[in-house]
Amino acid sequence: MATALATTQKGQTGATARKVGHAGVRWLATADQLNREYRVSDSAVSVGRGVVKNTHLHATSFLGQLSKGQKQFDHIGRTLFLLSSQLV
Image (tube, rainbow, N blue to C red; front, side):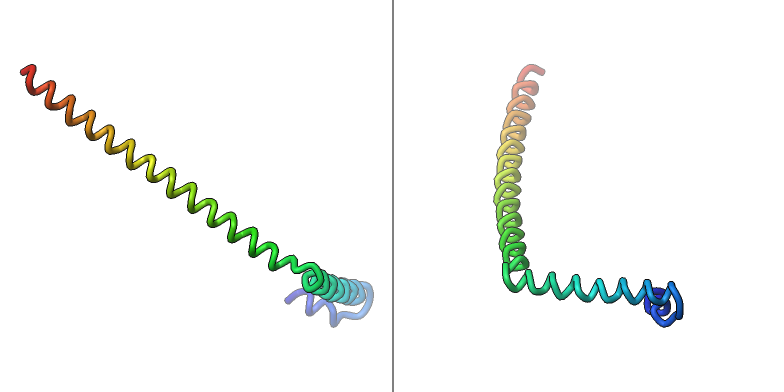
């Protein structure tokens, strides 16, 4: 909002704000052209999907291992309880 207001000012402030605005428009046009030419956004989406898929696979594997470990600890705990109750 302040930048838009600054572009309406006369003098150095207005001129600088307008130059920045024009540079921003040129930058966006160049970025859009590069994106269309090299399909940067398509590549980024593809890489992102790969990262999410890989993370999901690792998380699933890790949680599966935790579940197996928990079952083993439960079995050990029950065995120790049964052994200790036989000693009493």
